[in-house]
Image (cartoon, rainbow, N blue to C red; front, top):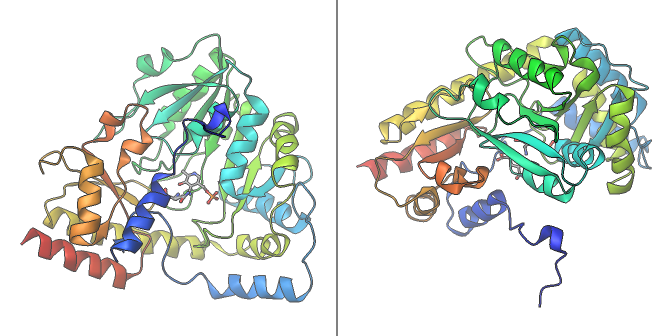
Length: 385
Ligand code: PMP
Ligand code: GLN
């Protein structure tokens, strides 16, 4: 007999947990789960140490510590010209993961439809299911992952409550363009639908591209919740500092849930996060340059190994086409690569509602030190030979 509640019967173990365990077991170079394996910035670690030493060690206010909310407000104003009142329009959460779950649980009623782009980040569908919502999928197709207006418009029904937009997009590396976001904004207004954006890779965009905020399109400020976090931009995925920016009535939906999920995130890390977000633009310029160099290096390694990469416009992931290698599917390929070649990758079928749609792809992460990437390159070259 299963003790699991009905609502979680269909949840398995995440593909990240599974593939990292397999990588550890086989001493594979882990290009699967997306976490940096290099040191986090010293100034950030120092700020965290200082906050702990200064006894910022008790509960933070449920909405987040004031210096962090002010730093988030100042940062989005500086980068995007977005106005967010730190006292009424910003909620600090335990990572973007909690922000997403809190917002979805706070907004979606049983039977409400939620439009998602697939491949999707793996927490969206479980969040929608926990809320009793019904996911509706728009499938992005390689190699350019473009959106067709008619096809997207057809997903909007009188039951649609919310659309989730992840840009830059994990796992494809797609950065949603102005035209596409404009189209989404129009559809949201035509059908009176709310939008939730996941922008955790906002500072990792390549080749001079620009990250646009859906919230800044005409008519969208009042109906958009903008979610981001510190983990990717500052190489501290274990800190779990996230936030939601939204008008007060929408923010309340996420806040009410957040109170009873975590109440607040780690106070000293919020203090350090405020220091992080005050850094100048050159920090982000270096981040992008470093990741672009890593992307170019890994793409060239993958191509030489017979794994044609699909160039990502942003994020620290690259998808490759495995259709010519003769494996039954992406899971078989990624297990083989991890156990026999010693390089772990993520099978993207976990990010599709119909796993067959991801069966010809594999995802590699390049948020790794050059040493790690060099070792992966060496193993892939040997395999190729
Ligand atoms: N959204 C996307 C698209 C991600 O890739 C991640 C990374 N795990 C998250 C959300 C979660 O962010 P956090 O670690 O801040 O919870
Ligand atoms: N965001 C990371 C990825 O896509 C992993 C997140 C996690 O392990 N939950 O690889």
